[in-house]
Length: 116
Length: 110
Picture (tube, each protein chain N blue to C red):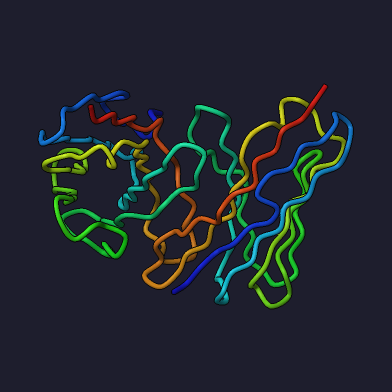
């Protein structure tokens, strides 16, 4: 019973490169959340997706950031032209369809992005 | 905008002392959840409260959901060094996106 799988665990990118973060949700989970966490800070909501659909992207920066959750394969968080300020831990979480009040989320181990 | 705040931001206690963190939402929540994140780790789901005034216990941890469903608390009795970490409350807002509180970092000294 694999949990939420994120890869890579650590990612180093030079300024201007692209970063691709992958997240495979728990089996049976239809919803995926992405959060960003700066050192010593809280979890900042970025985007909430279900298969082939973005439900809420109100926490995503308008430029350079995008997310998808295709019908087949993992959810991808893509950051184009990375800058030093993008350095953070990016956590993915998955959950059941919240209909019926089941909204608890199960987290992956995160991807630590370092931009040099 | 919709916010979920927690106090205190930090708490240092001696092992064996009690600890409480408080969570307040700017809007009514359908449910409140609590998570624990160990240093260097990822958030782990602890519990979900749904009913107004609900109280749940997990060993030394007591969780409470306020009558107005806008606030919650987590109380740990007789802390141990294994309780070290950051405790977050979270609630579904708007589109059911899960919004996390600001967190309370607990340090326990032996």
